[in-house]
Structure formats: C-alpha cells, structure tokens
Length: 251
Image 1 (cartoon, rainbow, N blue to C red):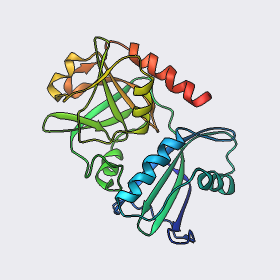
Image 2 (cartoon, rainbow, N blue to C red):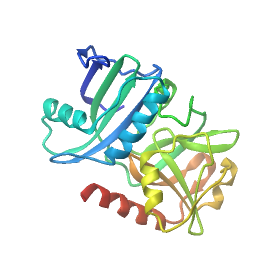
Image 3 (tube, rainbow, N blue to C red):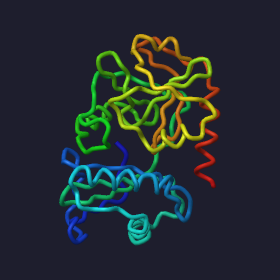
Image 4 (tube, rainbow, N blue to C red):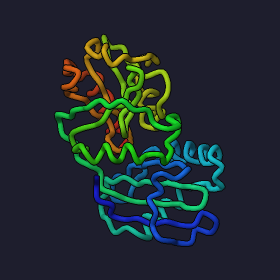
C-alpha cells in the first residue's frame, strides 16, 4: 500500500481535530480526488462533491463537503511544491478523515487478476473495504489490478471501473458496481455509444481492449489477464481516451 504523507481526522459536529481514524469498516462513504500541478488543481472536484454530498444524505450523515474546505486543508497542512497526489476524504456519522498520498506511476504492461467477489452496497463508494484492502496488499498496484466478478459476470476493478471494447463498440457492466466519476466523465467525451451489458467472464476473448478508469489510475490499458488467457490486440480506444483524460489534467 502507498505511504500516507498527510492524515487528519475531525469531529463532524464541530470539525475539532481528533486522533486519526481511517474509518475502514465504518458505516459511511469516501471519495478519492486527484490533485495535479503547483497550485494545485482538484480534478473533477465539483462532480466528486455532488456525489459525495448526495451520498452522505443517503447514509444519514449530517455533513456537506466543500471545495474551499479541501483547499484550506491542503494549503494549511501540505508543503508539496508540485502535485500528482490523491486526496482521500472519508466520513461516518461522527468522524471526517482526510489523507494524502503520492499517486503511483503505472507500468506500461499493466496486468489484471480476477477474483470472485461483489462489494457490499456496490453502487455506493462506502467504507466496507477491509476485504479489498487485504487483497490489494497481495499485488503490486503499480502494475496490477484485481477485477471482481460474481455469478460469472464481471463487475469492476478493486479501485477502477472497466470498459470493454469490441469492433469499435464500447461496453460497461449492467449493474452491481459503483459508477465512478472518471467513467462518467469519459463516457460523456466519447463519440461512441457505450452499451450496458452483462459481461461473462468466459467471453473475454471477444474483446480487443479492456480499459481501467478511475481517479487514481486515470486511464489504463490492460495488457493481459493470464489466468483467462486474454491478451490485448488493440490500443485504439485507449489512445483516444488517454488523450481526453490528459487534457482534463492540463486545462
């Protein structure tokens, strides 16, 4: 796991600083926002805030996060001069926790492993993540991702969404996963129609590209899933989407 460079917890009711608590396993939600540049820029921050604050209400948490609070937190606590970092914000009924870590530089030949698992309350980015954290400790996250499946249907990566490509047609799973901010943004930027489809784990040979997208990884092309004897045969859509994502970082 990546080293945490900065971490603080607050009482929700008055934002008084308390002993740090990661909140993993608590009833609550979290989001991860990428920071880039010297200023820094918070990537897709408005979209993150909208979804985060919507879900706090759904979890019965009386707290609304703001962009200004995040900027103040960074400016008051961090001396980093040039950012390519990930800011994690987690909240439960009584505790707000924020941590900062360096973003990994990812390997060009990125691989994936499959694991039979479906997240608890999968349509929310909730804090029931202990199982996932234990799995991530067993891989090198700079060059590997774990892909979850259930009832032979592929759902999502442990930290990413998945896009499947076949004959210039793009597919995402139908249900039972978290529809992430980066995925939502990229789909809006595509000139192609994206179809929702149940993707059977045994049918991967039909696809020429498998792409991982998320705040931490950006856009990644999987080179192989050796257990399933799948190897990529194209990078066309990856090249298109990675340029779109890069533009988002530098605008």
